[in-house]
Each structure stands twice: as structure tokens, then as C-alpha cells.
Figure 1 (cartoon, helix red, strand yellow):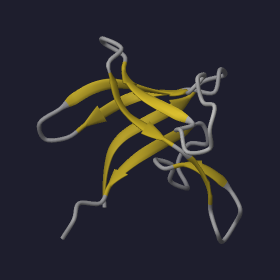
Figure 2 (figure 1 turned 45 degrees about the vertical axis):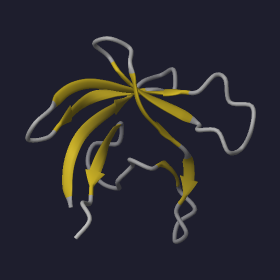
Figure 3 (figure 1 turned 90 degrees about the vertical axis):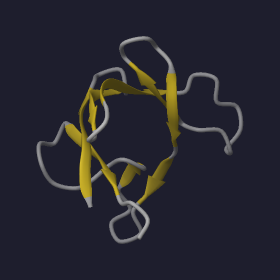
Figure 4 (figure 1 turned 90 degrees about the horizontal axis):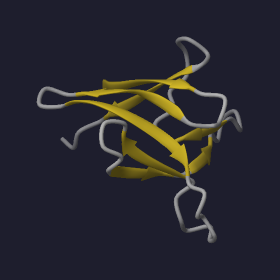
Length: 91
């Protein structure tokens, strides 16, 4: 697995950081979705901090072993208010 972003939690429930791959380096934010009206809609939107374009979405999940809530990009460990995006490419 490769870490492609490190994010810092903000007091408004969003996360900010930089997405970095071999081809891309982009400031991103993961922000709560204020227009969510159905369970099937995402809990978060992933947007470019440079131009506001939506890059993706995220849903709240709970770890089976601990019951801990996470967004699909959460990883345990590290600094408590930082999160990481881990890319696990297909084999």
C-alpha cells in the first residue's frame, strides 16, 4: 500500500491536505456533504482546494474489529488529527 495523501482534520468536520502521486500533486479537501438526503448519497465530497472541482466522494464506515468510525481514507496511527489516503492498486 502507498500513502498518497496526508490530511488534517478541521474543526468544521472537513479535512485538508495534499494528494500526491507520480503524476499529480494537488491541494484537496474532504468536506461534509450538506445536500445529503438519502443513505445512498455520499457523506463527504472530495474537492480541489485550488478550483473547487469535485474529485470524488466518501462514505462514513465503521471498523468491524473496533467499531471506530472512519471515512474510506482513514488509517490508524500517526498524528491524531491527521488522516491518510492509501491507494491499493489492482494486481
